[in-house]
Image 1: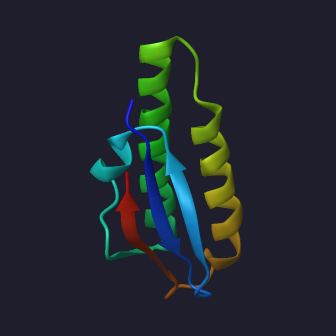
Image 2: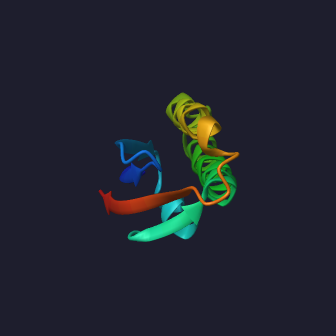
Image 3: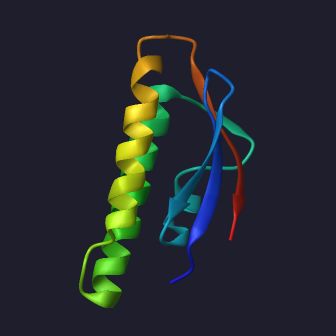
Length: 95
């Protein structure tokens, strides 16, 4: 299963390298695209849930790394949720 790394720029300009266990993330997020925080989180939830399910279907067990990555994204995004103009940018994907 091809893993994908993606780089996220937070509203405070920090950049984080994030992980998806499958290419499902590419169906939900696009490089060089800004997302409102809530939209980014919803897309990330859908993508990482689907990616984790792909792992379960192929290997018979859940991908804890996908769940851990989602937890990190939700935790990091929390302070920005109430900033109406805050955007999260997906900078790039790497395989």
